[in-house]
Amino acid sequence: MGIGKATSSLEELIEKAGGCAVVDGGFATQLETHGADINDPLWSALCLIKDPHLIKLVHLEYLEAGADVLVTSSYQATIPGFLSRGLSIEQAESLLKKSVTLAVEARDSFWDAAKATPGHGGYNRALVAASIGSYGAYLADGSEYSGRYGPDVGLDKLKDFHRRRLQVLVEAGADLLAFETIPNKLEAQACVELLEEENVQIPSWICFSSVDGENAPSGESFKECLDIINKSDKVNAVGINCAPPQFIEALIRKFSQFTEKAVVVYPNSGEVWDGRAKRWLPSKCSNDDKFDYFAMRWRDSGAKLIGGCCRTTPSTIQAISRALKERP
Ligand SMILES: C[S+](C)CC[C@H](N)C(=O)O
Ligand SMILES: N[C@@H](CCS)C(=O)O
Ligand SMILES: [Zn+2]
Image (cartoon, rainbow, N blue to C red):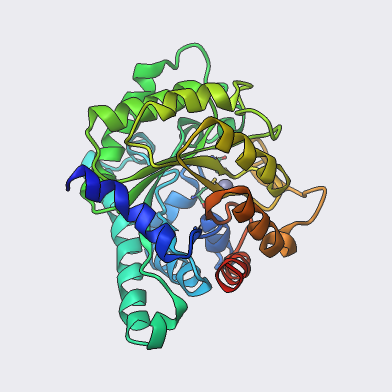
C-alpha cells in the first residue's frame, strides 16, 4: 500500500461522514451488558477465548448505532498475557488475528446489507481500528491511568512489548491502528518509533488518558507528548480516550494548539476505574444523557473523530451519531 493511499482512508472516512466521523463506544462495557465476566487480567480479551460470538454481536450493535469506526477487542490482548494463561505463541497470535477478523466480518456483513438499501440507510462503510492498549493495560493494575511504570521500564522494553502484537494486527488486515490510554511521553515515543521501524503503511491514532484534564496521567504536558508525535507522518490523529467527558472540550482546544493532526476524542462516562478493586466508581455528575450535546460542542471545537469509551453504550453512540449527522 502506497503512502498516499495509506494516509487517506481515515481522512476519506471523515469527509464522507460530513467532517466528523463517529467512533464506537465502550466495548468491554457492552460485553458485560451481555453477561460476559471479564474480571480477569485479560479483561475484555478473555472473550476472544471464551465468547467470540459476543464480540461480533457487540461490533454489530455499534455499527447499527451509527459507528463509522469499530475498535477491535485487542485492548488487553497481548502475547505475554496469553502465554501466562498457558497458551502457545501460535495460539496467542491466532487470537490477536481473530480480534481483527471478527470486526472485519461484522463490518462486511453489516455493510453488505446497508449498501443494498436506499442511501445506504445513512451508514458509511466502517473502518476497523485495531486496538493497541497501553503497557499499563496489560499490567492490569490501573497504571494506564497513572503512567507510573517504574524505573525498569524504558523505551526498548516498551517497543519490545508492542512490536509483535502490532505486526500481527497489521498482517491480519486492520484498516488502522488505535493506540489507546497511553499515559506518558515515553510510551508515546515508543509507539512513534515502532510505527517508523516497522514501516507501518496503514493510518494510526494515538490517544492518551488524562486524570486531571490538563496533562497526561504521568504529569507530563500534552505539548511535550505532541512534540514527539508531530515529527511522525505515520500518526494521522491524536487525542484522548477514557477520560471524563467534562475534560474534553478544553483538551480539544489544547491539542489543536499543539498539532495539525486530526483530533480524536472518545471519553468514558465520567466514572473512575478503581484498579485495585477492579470496579468503576460512580461519577460526580451523570453525563451519559448529555453526549449528544457534548458531541456537537466537541465537533465545533475541532474534533474530527468522536465516540465513547468505557461505560458508554450503543445508545450513547446512537445519540452522538444522530447529533453529528443530522445537524452538520
Ligand atoms: C480501561 S481499564 C478499565 C481496563 C482494565 C484494566 N487494565 C485492568 O485490567 O484493571
Ligand atoms: N477499546 C477499549 C478501551 C478501554 S479503555 C474498550 O472499549 O473496551
Ligand atoms: Zn475506556
